[in-house]
Length: 128
Image 1: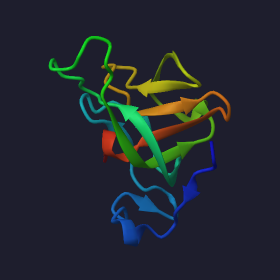
Image 2: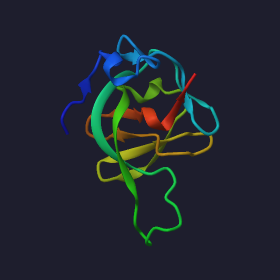
Image 3: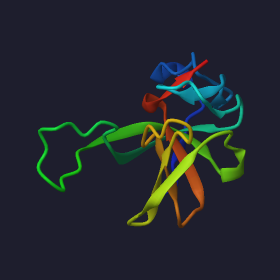
Image 4: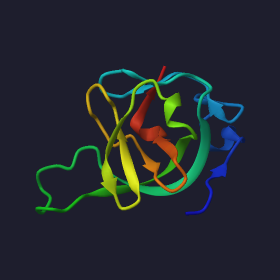
């Protein structure tokens, strides 16, 4: 997997409300239970394409089918011990999906077993 592109020009992507100096400007929380996932200024904003399973699969899918969506804005965390609150799923291919450790909502991102780095999708979390 290629290295993610670090984007410090947040203005062009409309992320300036959430990103400052290339890092998360605010505390990152679970969208559902508001449990704290990361403190502010602990993750780096990156742009990369990665497909994640939908958080809610729905009842109209075929048995065994996993619906996914392509996401391209993430916070990169290079040390898993930086997290305040995160859960890890069982291994799928060479990744573990990240979930809220309190309410188990997810996946909110993924953990790459090769690089030992984590990525939290901006669209799957709350900023406060």
